[in-house]
Amino acid sequence: MNAKDSTGDSIHTDPTQPVSPSTASDQYLETPDWDATDPMLPLPEEVAIQRPSSPVVGRNNNQQHAPASSIKFMFPSAPGTTTVSGPLSLHDRPFPQTAVSAPHKQQKSIVRKPLIFALIALAAVLLLTILFTIAGTLVVSPGNDPSVSPILHSNVPEITSKSAIDRPGAPGTGAPRTGAPGMRSFQTGPHPLVVIKGHKGDMNISTGGNGTVLVNARKQGSSSAGSANMQVQYAQSKDERGQDRLDITTPQGNANIDFDVMVPAAAQVQIQMDGGTIAVNGISGVTIDTFSGNLDMENISGPVDVQTENGDITARSLNGSVKMQTQNGSIRVNTINGQVQALTQNGDVIMRKATLRSQSVLETNNGSVRVDGSLAPNGSYRLKTTRGDINLSLPANTAFQLSAHTASGSVSNDFGASIVGAAPRSLVNLTIGGGGSISINQTL
Image (cartoon, rainbow, N blue to C red; front, side, top):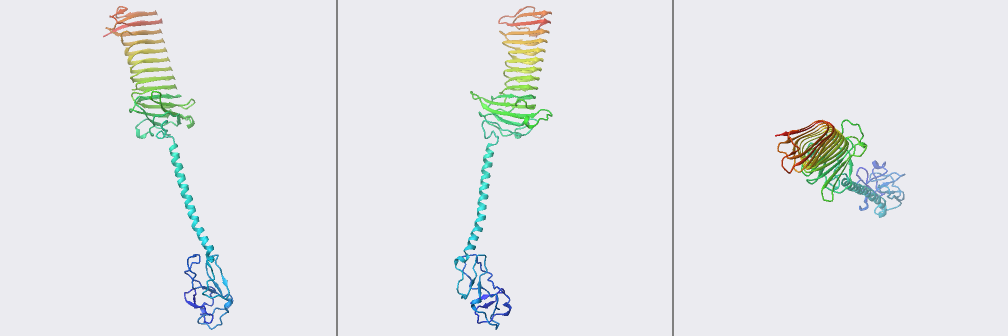
């Protein structure tokens, strides 16, 4: 049987044969291609020979060979292999299967650890994916929550197009959601009710697309209020009749926020503000209650009920029942058709191109009352002031019954009589409580 030295030459393991002197200094002769850690490989026929104290003898050396009992047979291998000493035949297998059992276990452990780490990492990725998916469905998004509109946390100076608007909401019955000012879009029916309750700020209501309400809430002027005081609540629902309703609210103590709101032409709008200028154009009805600020309305085709404590009220092209009231300010309307109640404490009441109907009242304490238009038959019309003049201009074919009184001043009547025209006649009552003049003018 032969063994190999480190150069690949064969040497004799028979002690009776000489060994080359060039290998006498080698302590170990290795087998380069055998993996001792693999239990499935057979043990090699070539082994390493070590003799710690006696010279090695080989095929070309005449030195005496050491006794077999002093020869050590060693398998170079990973830790855990066995070194056997003694008079053994090279054909014997000094290592049973257990000689590689420890490296085998170590190899299986080395293989298992990366696999376990990979499985743990995969499970973590799957868990994070599920959590992010669930979190995405819980984000304020009216597209996912049918009761609430979306909330976009960005300030936009004006409404431009739908492409710049957050996802649309859908009708629902949920509680209001709070968010920072910004632009919102709400899908509604053609006749929604929009209710806005604010602190202070200017407001502009106009017509937009059918079935869509667009809201742009923005910080007023150069206010330095923090985000905690820049909050708006939105809630979309249906009433008991199935009508769409959208509530927009700024809590008390909030910073001043301006609103631009676009609604369907058939929408009804209700506004309650502490103060600010409010302008409404092109809708089918409006209700406004504000402590201070001017009110302006145009092209309203339905009922109007507005009041302000301190501010003027102006309107153009109103068609429907109209109630206007201010404590300190004037009321001026151009082109109106309907029943009218216009009241002020300090200011003028002036209506041009007016068609008054039913029971209409125009009254002020300190100011003048002037009406240029017509009176529907069978109606009752009262014009009154405490200190100021009254001027009523009517077409020549108007049928009316006149009652005119002033405490101090003159009464002038172009019709020349108190009862004019054939029945049915309108009842006209003109009263000045203090000083002032009354004029009834006839127009073509």
